[in-house]
Amino acid sequence: MAQGRLFIFSAPSGAGKTTLLKRVMAELDNLAFSVSHTTRAPRAGEVDGVDYHFVSQERFAAMRDQGAFLEWAEVHGNFYGTSREAVLAQLAQGVDVILDIDVQGAAIVRASQLIDGAFVFISPPSLAELERRLRGRKTDSDETIGLRLRNAAKEMRAAVEYDYLLLNDQLEEAVTVLKAVVLAERSRAHRLPSGQPIVLEGL
Image 1 (cartoon, rainbow, N blue to C red):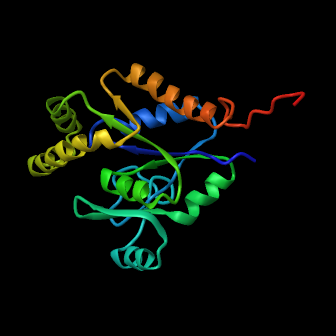
Image 2 (cartoon, rainbow, N blue to C red; image 1 turned 180 degrees about the vertical axis):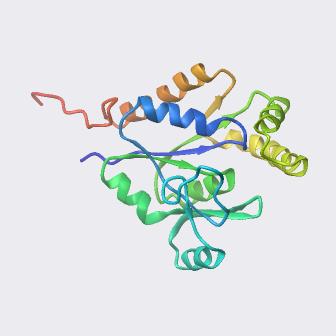
């Protein structure tokens, strides 16, 4: 069985990453999210084990100290971490794994060189547009929005460290580009668009 490909996605909060990834995953087979662990409280509609593994600060610290995380980071006062064992198991099954992590976590994965991955940064057209989107959600206070915008400016400067930079301005165009990235990475690894290995008959 062909080894799966790891895709690392980062984006400022409000850039539309979740909507974009859900669209692409609905249109391409053999893609799966790595479900992160987090100490933050669930948001409305989120399901434990599906959106995140919601754990206590104590449980997270124990896992971190045991070396259970491929990467972990503190973001907006909460901790997030990716299970090393779970990612390696999915890749071994030939599944392409999506890590939805911030630039801190991506830098840790990149520096560790434990797993080769394709790094994709999703950016809003501008900070002004990002602020409009954040305010449109009507879920955050002015203080929280200000914090997210300050963090976004720092994160967008890190985009140069990624293999791919995708501007999420028009959703349909962004979906097309992101699908192209996944399919190109599969072809580079001698795999079909479905993710299955290419076998040349007669050779």
